[in-house]
Every structure is written in C-alpha cells, then in structure tokens.
Image 1 (cartoon, helix red, strand yellow):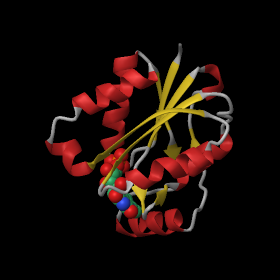
Image 2 (cartoon, rainbow, N blue to C red):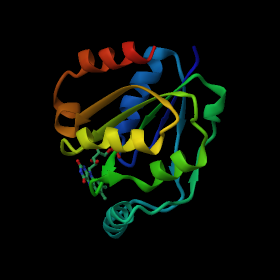
Image 3 (cartoon, helix red, strand yellow):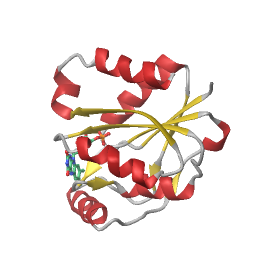
Length: 155
Ligand SMILES: Cc1cc2nc3c(=O)[nH]c(=O)nc-3n(C[C@H](O)[C@H](O)[C@H](O)COP(=O)(O)O)c2cc1C
C-alpha cells in the first residue's frame, strides 16, 4: 500500500502534523503552494474573504496522487470554509477510487463540520479516516494517541 501526504500550511501547524503522519507511514509528502501571497494583515483579511466566498486560486504541487493507493490531505480552515488552495487541489486532481483521509488543525472546533463537506467534495473516493485538532491542543497537549489511532485506520 502506497501513501501520499499532501498539505497546505500558512503558519506551520498542519505542516508539522503532515510530517508526523508521513514519518509514521513512511509516506511521500507534498506541499500545496498557493501562488497568491497569504502573508501580512491585508492578505490575511483577503484569505478569509476568498475562503468565505468559495474562491479558487493558483496552486503548485509536485506529486501526482494517481500514483498512490491512499492520499492523506491536510489543511487549516479559513472563515469556516475549506481554504481556496485545498478547494483548487480537490478540483485539479483525480481522486476517484482512491482511499482518502483528511486532517485539519484549526483554531476552533470548526474541523468537526468540515470533514463531511470535504467528503462531499470527493464523492468518488473511499473515505478511510479523519483527524482534527484545535490549535490550543496541538500546541499544548499530547495528541499522539489520537494521531496514532488515525494512522492505524489509514495504514
Ligand atoms: C484568514 C484566516 C481565517 C481563519 N478562520 C478560521 C475559522 O473560521 N475557524 C477556525 O477554527 N480557525 C480559523 N483560522 C485559524 C487557522 O485555521 C489555524 O490558525 C490553523 O491552525 C492554521 O494552520 P497552519 O499553521 O497550518 O496554517 C483562520 C486563519 C486565517 C489565516
């Protein structure tokens, strides 16, 4: 079974989790780069606006998920919505028939509602697991047991 971990991360939280998952699974890892600058206060506001209005963006990534059995995809939430680089990725790649899992580190518990929406955006994939965590727990608590349970499911 081959695994690809794909992630977008603006401030590093989801990158850290992506690295942990990839290490545990000896998986390949790929970063989604948003070609739109998302740093700085004005761009922060625009990122929220773009996300709320369901906008797409221009992205770059290196690996083709078609080459893997299981694709594990992680990203934050912006303005209670799937972020533009993730929306764009899910539109651009073909995940039909693939085993797919999602992970999210977000500020609030907003990730709880997000997994259903992401599953709806990938209707022809087999959804094999999800892992969500609030930033506060991610930074201050030991979440390794929950992460290991997720990894067991997607092995
Ligand atoms: C523009 C913007 C909007 C955000 N909106 C939400 C939100 O609606 N709900 C939430 O829980 N977190 C929200 N966040 C917080 C991020 O999801 C959170 O900081 C996450 O851990 C960032 O992950 P990263 O370090 O991988 O980029 C928002 C962050 C940004 C930049």
